[in-house]
Length: 349
Image (cartoon, rainbow, N blue to C red; front, side, top):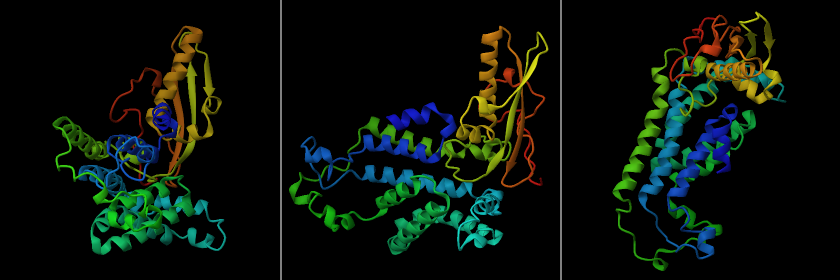
């Protein structure tokens, strides 16, 4: 619950990885994941079982399939296919010994970009097909290990490798020395449960969950501009490591009753990691402007005008404004969809 609470409280640390952990925490609380080799079994809280309802396994597999599939679809983005963000990140790591010159190569960045795209789109089918499963598993180990070495990306590579085991046959785990004696045997457990283990309400809830997970990541397809620039529909859509945004942001606050104005930097109110997220998101810039306007109004009794000066470099391009500096953000409402004050994306810059 602590992870879910933090995830919902702090928008500045939104990560697809944390979102996935929250989803898995919820799923594992629903599926019968404690029937073998668990603390509950060891303490006698639940009866051991050598089998589990098939829907529970496929629900977890489905969740990982959604992550990989939509991550691959998102990488069809023109900048990703052109190797732009990858080249920026690899160039930042050109100081690595022995491979520094390779990391500066645009051809290498392009190869890694297309390799990541193909991996995300093909890894699930390859894991499901018995003939390619071993090769897919080895490829997954290599892929996630390379991500850890080059980019860090926290615990996600290790979590993904553990989740990959969901696609392996259960007999494999029964042969592992560590689990051989811990897993219950079929002859030691009650008769096999009937195939229909879900009530109508449970089935409806499962189908609703599946529908949300399929539909929610489709929002970027309806975006009015490049999602990597406007961030429209980017949350909960598995758009992982698709763009590099760097720049600056300042708020111009003007009191309409006195004409007094003030220029403020977010550095006075945010941490460094919050600012990195703030400068690239029109929605967060709007929220920050609303907060400063509310504070000003509470202190001086009048709602000020708040405008933003933003300069953002996306994927190595020249810096340009992300939001219209002439718009009073204090009077702009939050909304679903595109914000009219977001400056249009210029791919040629």
